[in-house]
Structure formats: C-alpha cells, structure tokens
Length: 309
Image 1 (tube, helix red, strand yellow):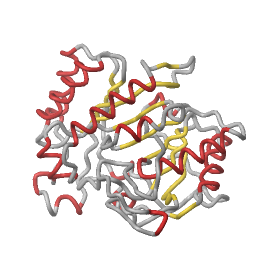
Image 2 (cartoon, rainbow, N blue to C red):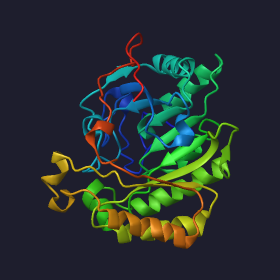
Image 3 (cartoon, rainbow, N blue to C red):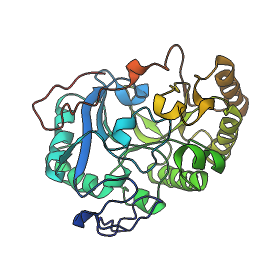
Image 4 (cartoon, helix red, strand yellow):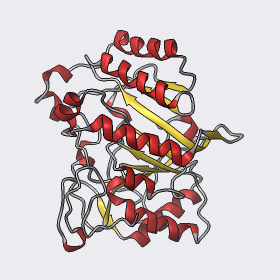
C-alpha cells in the first residue's frame, strides 16, 4: 500500500487532510517531520538499550493525546523542530555512529512515509541498527503493513481493554479492536522474537501496558487476550510508572494518585498464573518526573548535545 500525505489516513482518525498543502488533521502534524529530542536513552527495556542506550528520536504531535501523557508538550506539538526527510536520515546515521543499541522511533505513526524515505536513504549509506517502532497502539493495519522490511522490533502500547476508558482518557474510540489487530499484524511481520548473543532484541514485538490507578481489572483482561492470542512469542512490559500530571488531574480526580503496590502485584500475579514467561516488570520508584526527558531539541539540528538519559 502506498501511503500519502495528500489525503492522510495513516491512523484510525483517517482525517483525509492534505498535509502537503498545509492542512492539519487531528494529530496536528504537517508535511515536515517535527522532532523534540534526539538522545541516547537508558530507560527503555534492557533488550533495546544495551550499554550505550537506545537511539531515541522523539517525534512531536500524536494521534492519541492521552490525558495522562508524560510527554504532554511533545504530544500536543508545542515543542520541536521541523526537519526534512534528508535531515532525518542524517539523524539515523548519527545515532548509529554514537553506538546506539537500536534506533528507537518514539510516537512515529503520523510520519511513516517520511521515516520510510529516510530509512531508504540511510541504508544506502550503511545504516544497520535494529529499527524500533515505539507507538501508542492506535494504528491502522495498512500503515503497519507498509513497514514490512523497515521495522525490526515493534514496541506498541496496549492501553485499554474497555472502550469506555479509551474514549474517556484518550478520545480513542474502538481502541482495543484497532490496537489488537495492529499488534497481531506486527507479530506476523516480525515472527517470534529473536535475541542476539548480547541479549539485544533483533526482531520481535514487545507489548507495553501501563497499569492505571483503580483499573487493574482492565489490565487482567488485557493479559488474558495477550496470552490467548500470542502466547510466549512476544514480550510483555508491565509498567507501574503512572505519574499524575496537572493537566490530567484537574479533569480526572481519580488519577490524582500513583498506582499502589497491591494493584501492581495483582497484575503481576495474574501474569504468573497465566504462565507468561517473557515479561519485563518494574520495581522501585519509577513514578518520578526525573525519568521524563527534557525536550529541548538536542540533537535535532546536528552539532548539539546528545545526552545519555
């Protein structure tokens, strides 16, 4: 399938706007790629970071705009620098030259055509890092199919089982149906996960799930689906790092608190009961703002600071 910005249907919003003519749809993205930060990032799953960190590219704008998003300024498009596909290709090469373990494309869905063009150009110059597609899960299967041969590791969220929660917190109707169809397509494209001799994932799917305060029962249903449909062919990353942010708690008082240890333990116990073998879990104080990157545009224009975060 040929993807086009002239009548954009990259995500389930299917706005149909002509981004090449300056029109903007739900996500707010234009024709040029907008990036908030290029970095070496240590806080992804260990099989993606290695010794030097994942080579993250944090894209501005988002197709979801979750109320509790930790990267609020980025997802709303308030910060970032626009670049051409040619510059994006250079960024990919620079991440490789700095020794990144992977190329981690964060919130990339609305820029898939430009990413494909940039990867083609980078590969013609020797780019060889595993490419990670780090997304919110609210995807069109056709867009995921277009990434065949371009993405090695898919890192989707599976946020909600209950559509009412998806509508309430992310304005994403039909989220579970869309996300599960996309995840099954991702698993088809990569096959069962593969690790190299250094413990780094070279192919496969890691499904992330952030347990929300008061919603652990929804999490149990998500684990049931993952185990039934995908078994142990994928990794699951169960996160307890929900961090209340002012933009969210003002609208949703029930999200003014962090997740309790008991809530998280119930989810972990259910995963163990199901026999899920490949799970990343979090421990200690993960729900802290210090883990949220500073989106200051570093690395976007070249010659800037590339911090290990």
